[in-house]
Length: 285
Ligand SMILES: NC(=O)c1ccc[n+]([C@@H]2O[C@H](COP(=O)([O-])OP(=O)(O)OC[C@H]3O[C@@H](n4cnc5c(N)ncnc54)[C@H](OP(=O)(O)O)[C@@H]3O)[C@@H](O)[C@H]2O)c1
Image (cartoon, rainbow, N blue to C red; front, top):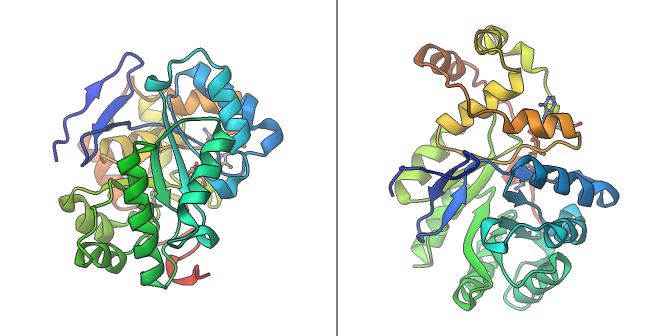
């Protein structure tokens, strides 16, 4: 898989997925953006220049996201929209109806990426679900398909069953939880890493990362901006969430500086195996 990134007009690099499709490396996530404000927040993000939106059935804001997309003047082909199959909708009989309900709520004919949200501990169930995602991709209604929160053994199970290699695995990843083992496993297999909680979900004080304030000062940027830059330079796809216009813009304003080797070395030292969200082992259903 080539790591060559093409620059788009608004400076967001596109990365190539293993199925040949391209994904904007920086997007906008809408977890915990309440339905009542999601249309305005996504409109603000699109206005800022974001073209990649990450939602999920369980965020309960697909309709509002769809309204923002459909009322924008942006051609559909310039947008990259991801949504996800929720846990209780997994299975051979339920995955496709759940997908169709998401499309309906979004008011779209297709999504760019459809993910299995969590593996759970029943591998047969996610294998049957994945076969349905393969059918959805075949139909053209999801241009790419991937997984989220999958562990090494889950990816091995897909491979052992001879099924499609996921285009991405969307996993918790931030400076205090860098996921080296999983990334080292999946990336040579052509599976791109997407980072959820890229800013640690605001659940730990980022200033406790020893040396980060100095890096931010050196570049005249905020701590959040240097973290976003670190993800980008690591080849990770990310979509930080914010409900405030100022931060939506701040998080996008990361293409006019570069972290140097010293900065990256300091970042490597921030990993302390600290999760801020659920361990996939504990999410069963
Ligand atoms: N697949 C999964 O299981 C999974 C799980 C979680 C998330 N996700 C996806 O990943 C996306 C990103 O993760 P996330 O939303 O959980 O967490 P995140 O992006 O790491 O952090 C969001 C938090 O950071 C704050 N924030 C954002 N920009 C900031 C800035 N410049 N300065 C100060 N604070 C800032 C936000 O507050 P304000 O809103 O008040 O600005 C919010 O509290 C989600 O929206 C969702 O699309 C997927």
